[in-house]
Length: 330
Image (tube, rainbow, N blue to C red; front, side, top):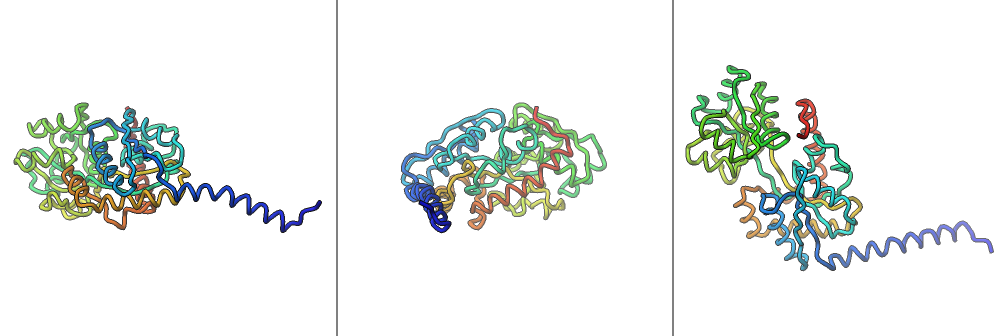
């Protein structure tokens, strides 16, 4: 029996529809069991705290728990790699940040692509940094600080938390845009150790996390010159932005976002995004994130497309900076 071309096309379309129906049905029934959120850092850190706050807010919307799983190691790469290998069924999320999904792609040889191997879900929060200096620094504003650095080329020191960390790359970007040369001093003990030396006057400046620097600023122990963002911080509105202070576009923020493994259905992405948006609008969630020094992205930037565009723009900005400075993983 011969089959006409029209019948063949009809059978092919029907077969394709049968494949599509289960995917649609899965998206409609989703979620039917608990979801895992991988945090690629140790428990108790800022990413872990933010992930748990957001997960709790999403649980109220999804009516099922989101189980936080800490998979630390290799600057976040182990946890992110685990998320890449997970099934693309919407039951494994990863909360990543500027370091895991931008910086690490430039300084490590990864087994995955930080852009192509993920489905963006939503931007969550950002954490701008502060340009601070020792109390005895003669400059009273950012322009004066830059002038002082130019008058003392190679003599000034800036504390960092190690290669590829926000304080390190913030210092590198500051050097490039200000046209100055500063000696980077890495501290294995992180923020507490270099801040102690900054307060003591052993180093000259730091581009630091507000949670670490603001208490010392408010105590009068160090000077602050600017926040590395386009807008002032809600927690410290008296500190000018880098644009206002005289160093335009010296922006640095350790933002955080949620991704799914590549291939997750669009319907599931939409449901998770809606849960995130609702959670971030909750006053309790907002207050808890504010207390951690985090700034929630505006509603119009909480979409999957906005995350994809932002991550790509951050890669376009930071990878050339990293490569020009020959920064490699230790």
